[in-house]
Length: 456
Image (cartoon, rainbow, N blue to C red; front, top):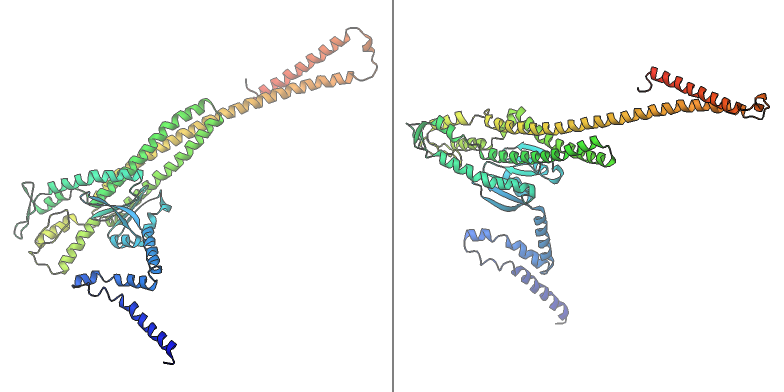
């Protein structure tokens, strides 16, 4: 007992340690099944942090991490094929896993490329950045970034209006499909057709990704057309006023108008060039067929799994299911051709022509501005020429007056002359030299007109 103080400290330390280790063991009686155990596995680290920090430090760290995750997440609006929408909050890693796109594609949707135009095709998604529309489109859904902005709300409203309508038309027009091994006919709305013709009727509607792309192009083209119309409405009165009155205020209006025109032309040109780039490359257009690639992957998975002839192969979530290998081969041969990009090509060509028309309107306004500037420059050159002619006339007159002044100076010296004593000689002398100077002025002026230095 002589070592009492030391002996009391050691047991106190040993008694405190089991208290810290006994706390994480308290959740052990809670899980009763495997599912509950798996769902309750994350809490122990959080309890460990709380214990290690004394109930305060660990809680602050966990809250800090939560704030970082919330700051890294962005607000997206999700639309499915039926037009059902919801607001979700995804971070970058979730988007990359969900859409199977590389991380660099998300930079295209950032604020740096706010007015750029890019349409990228990936394995399972399409990255669309058209003006203010920033979206990631898959075969089953579309994720829209910054969906609460004023310009993007038009795109969102069009999706809500058109997607349910198109999906309903497709469902009603498809009908019931019954395909057997011995009979390759499809019932579409009460009329029996062979499989290829029936599937062509089912495929008359565009895939989901092209429906979204069409709506996006329509909204962007309408937005650009509206801006061009407003620019035309403001441009022509300003230019006419400048042609009537060349002033600093009118010149400033034209300068601002021309800068807006240049920016608008660059935006239209970017969208037009992106569509033209896709039209020039069939491989890029083929890669945009996400639904077709999804169907092919489903077929390959079914074939690799050794599906029998009676097994049902899912063609698409919006297409009927076909049985028998013969009918599946017919569908793939007629509708799943990798080189068939006619639908997308027609879609892009329509909006390419519309953008080309918008670009021609802007170029016509620019030509009108150039013509007005040329007219103003001609006016200014004419005024400048008139000033030069006036200056030349005054120079000739100054020369004639200088000659008269020279003669008057000669006779104004203090030199005695016999003429000074004659009466009335002053008037005769002054009148004579004045007439001589006028004759000199008229001679030089006539010579300048003869040489076409002065206008008539």
